[in-house]
Amino acid sequence: MSAPTGVVDEALVWLNDPLTWTEPGGVLELAGEHLYMTVVAVAAAAAVAIPVGAWLGHSGRGAGLVVWLTNASRAMPTLGIILLLAATGLFGNTATVIAAAFFAVPVLLVNTYEGVRGADPDARDAARGMGMSGGRILLQVELPLATTLVSAGLRTTIVQVVATIPLAALVGGGGLGQIIALGMGTQRYGEVLAGGVVVAVLCLAIDGVLAIGQRLATPAPLRVSAR
Amino acid sequence: MPGNPWFSWSYVVDNAPVLWQRTVEHAGITIEAVAISAAIAIPLGALISRYRWLSGPVLGTTAVLYTVPSLALFAMLTPALGIGRAPVLVGLVVYALLIILRNTVAGLATVDPAVLDAARGLGYGPGRTLVQVAMPSALPSIIAGLRLATVSSVALVTVGVVVGFGGLGQIMFQGFRNNSYRAEIMTATLATILLALVLDLALWAAGRALTPWLRRRTA
Image 1: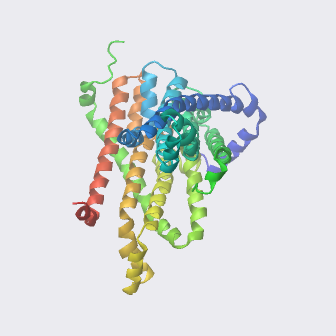
Image 2 (image 1 turned 90 degrees about the vertical axis):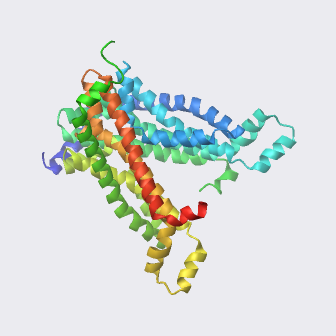
């Protein structure tokens, strides 16, 4: 094992080389791939979780299912699921995106469910009194009131997916995890460190941007009560 | 594809010693990480419940650390700690920290103020109030935090393959390398889930034994 300072120097040199970023298969291209995979996984998870969560919250059914799903998903090792999907013959990237979406569903589902479920009963009553149908109550009253929780759920989900995608590199896929996996394979620990820093910074930056987005997405009257 | 079943009992029987060894390794690092994390997070939680101004910086820092992906964290720890068990252990401690800390703070925040008043009225000092009154009241929440931290740590250990110490993840990955030997990956995945459930159950039972007053209330 080389001395830590040597590794840090190597990492700095690597990060300071413009070619590291711009070459084909460089950091920028990998980051683009990483974000593309994230978008696909989050979109797939949202397409399932938000409607189902909203419907369950609206009808008040499935509380047990929601709790069970969240707990069960925590015990499942993400890597195991990715490897199992890869063993069905899927490519590394596809397997990882499916697994990331799979683990994103419970988070979004719970938040949507709780948000719709927790809508002020008085508002719901008033809407019914005005003659709104169930679907309209859900779309025009309950979901707007659930914005805070749904956007919080989206933020957690996106950050979680960005953090999961690096695992693709272990099953031969792309994304920023490749830098780490490649560095490990070739024992260039400077690149391992640099790759770790790049992934960590991306995650923290996305979380920061989303924190602002979450604030903007929350209707002003709801902001005070949030947190 | 014949000859690559999703599950094979003969695989489990033939490889029982290795499976057991990895399971023990996996359980060992999980328990050690959660124990270390609890030893840091519970006192820290008590501290920030008392000195409110500390809660922002401390919870903020742990939340930032929590956001860093496991693969990246293990990767960043290797130059300093080398390859193997150490970076995985430190990484697990870091992740468990936020979970246990949050639950400790939340648990202490819900202690009935009347009970604290009563303790003060009985002449308890702040230290004794914390240990003998506030902590037992916060115990259910702390145990919930320990359970959550344990279950997520078990799943996280598997990512340790990247630095050469993944417990059962080592077997999963070997299965993938062995031309995607499904039975091997499946067995290791199921064993990981089972380990998480067993440890969770053990903590649940310990929590039940430690809080007999809750049982009496519901009975």
